[in-house]
Image 1 (tube, one colour):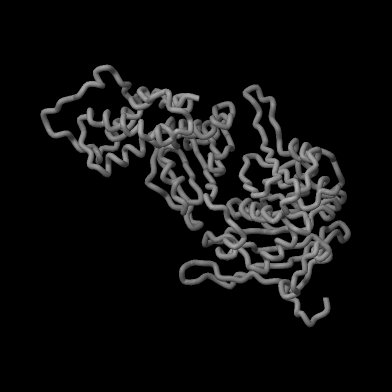
Image 2 (cartoon, rainbow, N blue to C red; image 1 turned 90 degrees about the vertical axis):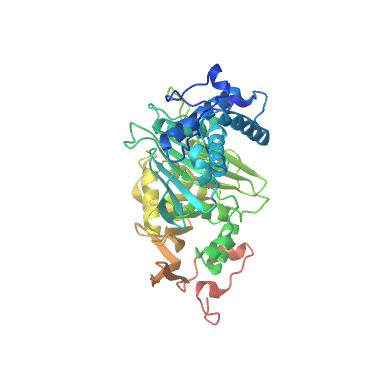
Length: 462
């Protein structure tokens, strides 16, 4: 596949196109001006160089030959910049070169932000506002796009390789970057501030439970308990707010699934990275330009049941697929995992009820709650604290029904003790002193947890 097929020439934004007279040298009789302080001239120079380089790039360079491509861009860049009547010191020349490379084969102004591993989220609100999340805090950056058309070009560059589109007829899009980072974009008319992007970065190094323990997200005791729950094939919901770390925790919990089991993962945009060999990854599909051909999470859950799964892992449950998920859990597909947005463990089950009603089956509320109580074993609630840290604040057992009410029992809770002088949340995750009713299932799986994990005195009878 020729290289030029994957390079997007900038839209007609008023930049000057190369002509035959441009290619000759331009002798100057005066000292060339330094344009670093003039953003308009600097931007025009970058656009002009970019346009000439794209026009003259060797079409025989193939996709994947990134080093050769970079060398070719460097050769053309040095040649054409020498013809321009401007003066740039070495550091400014290097910065301009990297910007040109990013515009031709990368994601433009986002490239340095994507390369910074300390940044966990990138938020673009139109061409003139770019925020990042670092250490759990939002920070406004000095990064700018040229104009709204510039933002649109970067959006198109991200989504076109995976066959998605974002235009006036479909002004919202979900996608993923090549490294697995989650991407969302909205454009006018639904966005009144211009094209917007949200990128939840995928860590280059796979996080483990030891990392979460080191971050203070949970304790070694909670980690040992959750590992036992996955191995014992309990059905688990990871609930929490936006950006609380639900998907990260789900990914880590999924790593405990034994190698000899067949796992089906179902997501809107594939983010889960399971290390097991026998994993089938399913992803939804948006409708085509005629509004047809959409494949939903619910379609995939239903189809997954025909694929002989040992475990079904749904990236996020958010609609009518909740009914099919519950039915799968209640018909022999134990050990399933999913996430959903909620404000507490109790609220997670209330949201699950609402999702089941969205399936249009007109089931009585009592029947829905019976399904939930018999299907779900454990709710893990994760929360993003005011200092930006993420913590498991509740590990709650679903014990069954009492009348028309689902009975919940906390196993571990986070107790906040205050805020230290640096603004960090101070607290502790502690067991409540009650062992779960499903402890027998864990022991039948050959796993024996010491009573101290649950805050139970060893001398006290179980």
